[in-house]
Figure 1 (cartoon, rainbow, N blue to C red):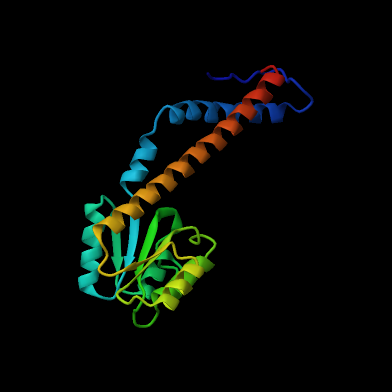
Figure 2: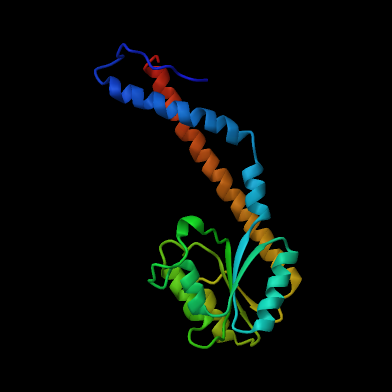
Length: 206
């Protein structure tokens, strides 16, 4: 339904009423389209983007293959420093802009030269932009204090190498459920906002 602007003001502040009309004209049709279309949700589920970090070329190729078999989009880098550059957390202006970057999961090796996976984890969790992204630590060494330290710092999981396909699928399923919950929460919030605007329009008798 489209609301037409009228030349006669309905209150002492007609500009605010017209602003409501403008918002309704944009939000109401959009709400109707999105609420009946789950293609956006399906697309986000099918294209989960994983950033994989490992200094070993063999391990990078292996984890990349597992992720692609699990229908994930994969970006691989060979160091924690490269990962920070990709995320734009290195302070350089030439890094990828967050607006163009959608990362659903970061998987990083623990033992890497220069900066460890644990240090990368801390950097990510210190970021106001990326702290909510799940980070999974991978290691060929089953050292309990190391595992506990990573989990306490906010790691989503700690996987022993070689990573198994079942591990990747479990992570993917968990992410998809989280994405679905986030999508539904967003739509519920949008619906409440639109209903509020519609109620204001009815009270104004537009």
